[in-house]
Image 1 (cartoon, rainbow, N blue to C red):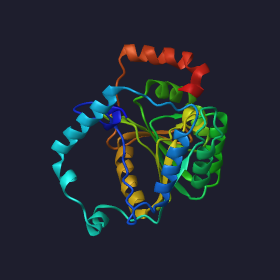
Image 2: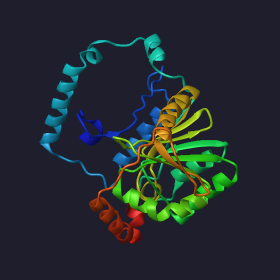
Image 3: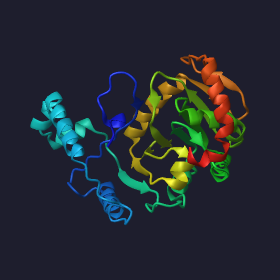
Image 4: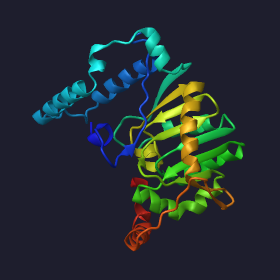
Length: 285
């Protein structure tokens, strides 16, 4: 665990999304069983070693005590089933999707499932911090759009490597038929989600980049819930209003709340250099 995502922030932080999955029958949930099996499979890999450091135990204990003091009601009150149901959104199903777990180049199983699901509906909204695609990934997006699926992709300009690759790849992105929304906000957006139609939400750790597709062991929850889909779609619609929209034909339209930023000469110089030196290493960004 790392405080970049789980810490108590005061100023700058990565905006992320946590989803609580609550099953009325303890231990019976499909995604729960899948996650337990996934954990045990990773734990049993020969490459996994026990990390021994006494500081970890003390740090976690201290974090627990701070949390207990800050939110005492969590440690004293137990919610009834009715209270849980009123505080959550109903889901028809929750399933865990994952990449292969072996520490080697991956067959893009997770990406293939995501693309196949996207192609089944006419309306797809994607949120990813950045987009760094291989030729095959571009072709997959092109196939989805050619089938009549309106595909909107919301990216945030906070990662310098993702930004420079995006500047290099704009023409390729437009050729896929996707609509790109460039979000510039105060906080970095670290969230990954794919909203398909009005009921399916894919949420988890998979970026739209080659590392996530071909190298990393990523996890996504496939949640069939019209309520959750509508809730997250409303959140992203607000971000789209603060974005610059690039259509497949290359036309540019600023959202009603979009505020452009002027780059310093130092950042412009840095991006110019990165656009060149990152080309041979795109698959590792």
